[in-house]
Picture 1 (tube, rainbow, N blue to C red):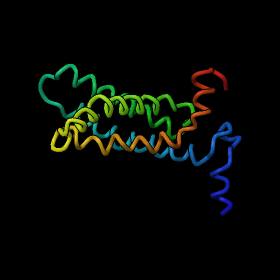
Picture 2: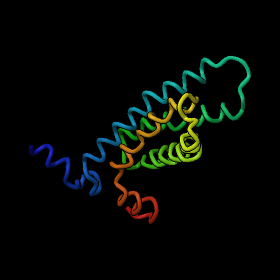
Picture 3: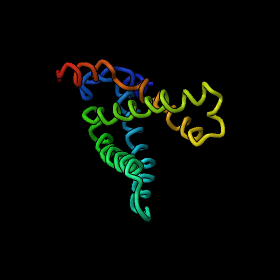
Picture 4: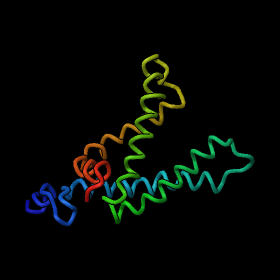
Amino acid sequence: MEFIKKLLQPSDKHKGVLPIQVYVLKLFFLLMFLFAGKDSWTELITHEGEWNPEIAIAWCSIAAYTTLSILGVFHTLKMIPIMLFMFLYKGLWLVFVAYPLWKNGKLTGSEAEGWVPVFILIIIPIVFTPWKYVYKTYFLGKD
């Protein structure tokens, strides 16, 4: 019970952020690194033939941010901008790609359908992101 209590109290070690928020973000940084990182690097390394430039940009971007995400496991609060990047691109994709398909009854059976459950999971780190800390640190520039 004491352990749970400590998870739910602001911590000086984590600049006033709840430890549970830090640990959930660490988990998502690790998952990004392991799963999206593996997929992106596998695609880059095993690709044969000429690249479609737009597809190559996407895979290189994913490889870059997921590789940097390993730093978020160790320096979680400093690497929150990587998480914000993920929120933004997945959120934009859900709004501009998935939602119109769903609204027009075309999501089911489309190539996009399989990505929706993966992308909708961003709700978990969004809920656990210390938004007050993000605002103060990254928007106001205060430590």
